[in-house]
Length: 435
Image (cartoon, rainbow, N blue to C red; front, side):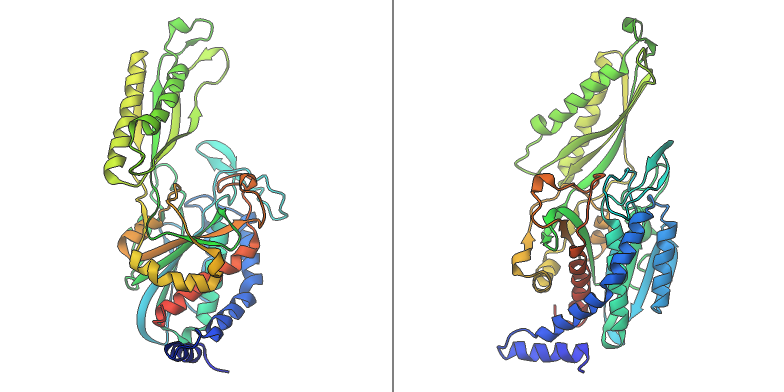
């Protein structure tokens, strides 16, 4: 039986002579992917049933590290608290690539009916919460473990080096902590050598299972978290004139913030979003509280527009509060995510590979995406490509599909082989010069 690289070489010769691109290359990788899928699905279900919040991915990281050591890779643990980094050395000199998966879950109470649904609870910001892989990071971790298994088996035939990055805290570090991609870079995630290219994927509910979505250049929004504290004066609920009601003031601020985007920003230049995602104030119905806390997120694509929107949010909140005799203090996150940008040249080179993986009718160039990703920190350092793999049930109406971050978020597991094969094929094609 010919080796994979012999097959690749034969395919390239055939292609240069006008013949079709070599099918055995893709068939060989597809067969290896199929062989590993039972393990990938088992890992994914196990991680789903045992989710862990950001910077607390101890069990997950332990399973990942043990698997990578079993493959004979050089493994570092404890990078950015619970991150795992492993290096695969090919048989000879060549380029270096990095592959990334995130491991953390969200404070969400799962409402799906899958037999491996999460029943985990923990404390988050002083409250008992459910924990769920409501964004698909369980799938990302399992997919990259499968890719590592396949590439480790091919190491004698591969040139170059592969750095596997299993990242904690993509959803954001807990209050008062650092975390995620920025901290991994700070702690030397690329100590084994700066990659020539980096690849990552995200399972997404907006695409049917197995469909790949990509975009060159700006792809996912930059994000800024904010905390807004409105302080009034506590009084009896029956005598509101004795106090300053921060709940009423907060409701006015929430309504006014919607006009920042809808009436104050030129949306023909770039889309933008201002969201209030949490409000907390008061303990009972007949007491006007002293203060109300709000938290939210801002999404932008342009640095100047971002600066303008942040200033407008702060000005809107403080002036509305002042008009009622209250005060409003706005604090923006010290660790905003930049815009996730795909390197245009790398994306162009990768599209034929992704097309062979998914099929010409199942790959789409998609529009700007308003979710954010801290993969953006890696993409600022290394030419990178980040893409979506759809996980919606085939035939499911779009308005019935539960979104990422929903308690009903569901992954159609028929999409998982596409994710494994995409990262594997991108790695082999880049390292061998086929891409």
